[in-house]
Amino acid sequence: MEARARARRYTSRVPPPRHYSAFAVTAPGLAPLAARELQALGLAPNDPEAGGVAFSADVQGLYAANVHLRTASRVLVRVDEFRASNFNELEKRTARLPWSDWIAPGRAVGLRVTCRKSRLYHSDAVAERVSKALAGLTDRVGLAKEKEGDEPNDEGDAQLVVVRLLNDRCTISLDSSGALLHQRGYRLAVAKAPLRETLGAALLLATGWDPATPLVDPFCGSGTITIEAAMLARRIAPGGNRHFAFELWPGFNATTLTLVRREAAVQELPAAHAPILASDRDAGAIEAAVANAQRAGVAGDITFTQATVSAALPPAAAHAVGAVVTNPPYGLRVSASGELRDLFARFGTVLRERFPGWRVGVLAADRQLVGQLKLSLTPTLSTSNGGIPVGLSVGIVDGSSPT
Image (cartoon, rainbow, N blue to C red; front, top):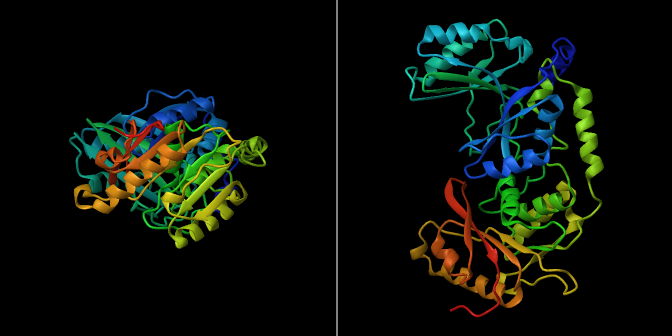
């Protein structure tokens, strides 16, 4: 709170840049989806890269990217890029940067440094030199403990500065998001092996689910996929009610953020157009999912049921076919788990008998399990979940008997 009060005192002193060179960081495999989201926001992205997608934005566009992106982990703003083959070059260039344009005096700073294929290969030594450039602005500089893909430590209001050395080129970026963007604020209760919100949204987008049609998740866990589906169907901006790191920048424009939030709220729909059904055999998982949906404000859009996959049913016949998007239990050693093979085989039978013509997206750690479904599915997305490599397989359910 003290840091936010200090930042407000400096709000009017530094005009923000007219345009930002930004980068939407994503989990592996999600960059093309983030690029599509940026395109829909009117922010022309570059070609997706392994770790995300670059784009250019004005102040309103940068704020909108943070508020609206569903599949990005954070949005970085590039401050400078230069050659640094020795510490003298690094110190001179970092000392010249207008740090006070970005970081209010006294604000804590967290440094994350990566060095690859460069003469400056010791990340701690690089961080020490960058810290010297910040010495006149703040004495609260430390190495950021958070790593992409892990649950973040509580860094409070510290400004994350990302320093990347690759082939003797140094890129310095500032995090505009703060807490990772998957933190929508609703998932306080979790079941076993919770699915990150950004991945839940990615599964829906990669499966090609039409929000005007029904959605079913028979392995809902703590409800992430169906909650993200309800937010998609109602056009609820995932970052509409959270704080961002850029709110503490000296050039922060509160009026512009208010406008972005207001425009997002105007787009919201009062209810989902079609049924969203979530079920799980575990009573604790259903309890957690209901609580999360209530916090997200979409509990009225989702029907939660404690049931096994064998009891899964589509909604009333009056509705059009929709999609089954789910994250079933999976193990690391498929060959050793006949129980999992049986579960997937039973799931496949349910799909063929009760969901013919429906689109299906199944996340699994091994294609052997997907094969037990006896459906013609195409690998569509490769990523990781909880450190485990996983893939999404997508297709249309053929109601005929398996061969």
